[in-house]
Structure formats: C-alpha cells, structure tokens
Length: 101
Image (cartoon, rainbow, N blue to C red):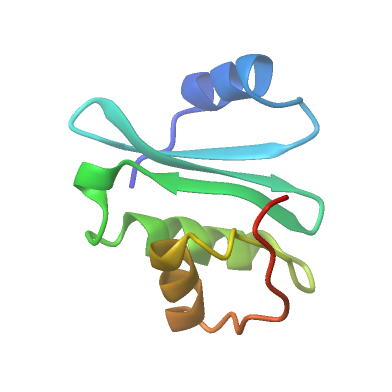
C-alpha cells in the first residue's frame, strides 16, 4: 500500500474536511481504496470492487487500529453483507442493526 500526501490533500479538500485523516491506497498508479478517520470514527473504508480480497481493506483497517489511541467505532448498513462479513472477520462484532433509514 502506498500513501501519497498529494492524494490525501485532494481528498481533504474535495471529499472531507482538513480535520479528518484520509488514507489512500494506491496500486499501479491508481487509487484502489481509501479510508477516513474522524476522531474515534472510521467514517469511510472503501476498496474498489476489482481490488477487493487482496489485503487492501485489511491494510487500511490495520492502519486505523494503529492510529487509534484507545478505540474507534464504525458502522455499516445491514444490507451490506460483504462489509459486515469483513468487519466481523476483523474482530468487530455487530452491536446494532439499521437499514440506513
């Protein structure tokens, strides 16, 4: 995983705010995944579908764990079965369910 300050700055300007920590995964000169950490919240973790199941999401999540001083929280929609399975496999038990409505 290669992180790039210029790409992170772009995400901070265009997608989120400058107080958030954006991390971008790049491969073959393209962005293949990203995450946003805002305080104790992992607000976004996304890996392009054609790059999933290659360890990119696990690497980003490991970075989030390393950056967290105590803990962090995350959530996903109940209908997002792949995301829920990924997080549960990484040791995050489901606490509550929502359909996003």
